[in-house]
Amino acid sequence: YAAKQTGEPVRRWTPALDERAGEFVSLGAEIRTAIDSEQFRVVYQPIVELPSGRVAAVEALVRWEHPARGLVSPAAFIPVAERNGLIVELGEWILRTACHRLAGWRAELGDRAPDKVSVNVSARQLARPHFAATVAAALADSGLPASCLAVEVTETAVFEGGQAVVALHELRALGVRIALDDFGTGHSSLGLLQTVPVDILKVDKSFVDNVTEAGRHTVIAEALHQVSSGLGLAAVAEGVETAAQAEALYRLGYRLLQGYHYGRPVADPDFALSAAIVTTARTNAETRAATDS
Ligand code: C2E
Ligand code: MG
Ligand code: MG
Ligand code: MG
Image 1: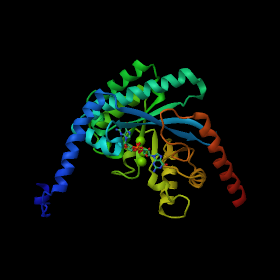
Image 2 (image 1 turned 180 degrees about the vertical axis):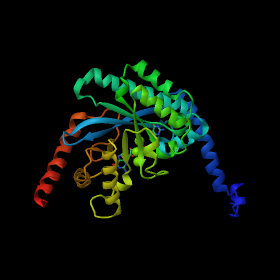
Image 3 (image 1 turned 45 degrees about the horizontal axis):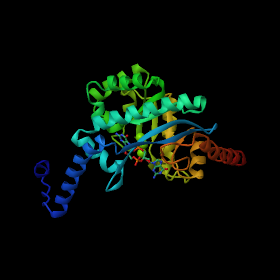
Image 4 (image 1 turned 45 degrees about the vertical axis):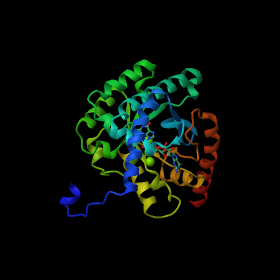
């Protein structure tokens, strides 16, 4: 109806659109079954700290091993689960699984375990009145200290303030860290950093892709790092795929890097191996910096 009011032509209902609607409905119905029959998995991607090369944190990412469709991408089913509301139940399961997993690594590996696990949270979860209590219960049941958990939210989820921002304050009060995900791509406003409690900026992959060349993305990547350090926030560069990108980011001041270069999301990351790969990138960056000056 909005389309009519703004004078845009109303799109005709085509068989192609029908098919897409059918797909939407059936995926939505299958998510219910999938939760009950345990088709979801959580995988973990390292977030590496330079110059030590330690895996400082891991990001928990959900996977759906569908019996007929194979592996279904979260980009396909998370929006569906958000619309039909099942993200609340699925999201709580992901949160609990991730907390248990890090608690297990801490018991098994001690100092070699990552300090934190970072869990993606949808706007719809955040808007629920008792979200912070759900998080507190997941921490209590797993025995994971609150300081070992970060929640990743998008700018869009918190842009309108309201209950979502109330929830972030409550999480902060528990000792949970807040990360702004895909920073710079949503309803971006630096003003958000004045009103929303934030500890970590996750600088979107789109600024990392061309960071080896002089250009707009690189200027923005550098500025975002300066803003974060000026505000006392941690900055994580997302989607680092090459050693050259890692070096360029290191030289811009980034000390927390995440991407395929360091490891893909997997069920059981090798924390020691990531350190070896990273040290080379750091050494190269320092060698070049020394040569340049
Ligand atoms: P995100 O939170 O920004 O997660 C990063 C995405 O980038 C992940 O895709 C990850 O596999 C991918 N990635 C990491 N490093 C690289 C790289 O070097 N190159 C490239 N090309 N990609 C990289 P994934 O797992 O497919 O997730 C996509 C999005 O789906 C996530 O983006 C997040 O918004 C959402 N999502 C994933 N898991 C969850 C979850 O448990 N809960 C919620 N609410 N959303 C989730
Ligand atoms: Mg994320
Ligand atoms: Mg992200
Ligand atoms: Mg991203």
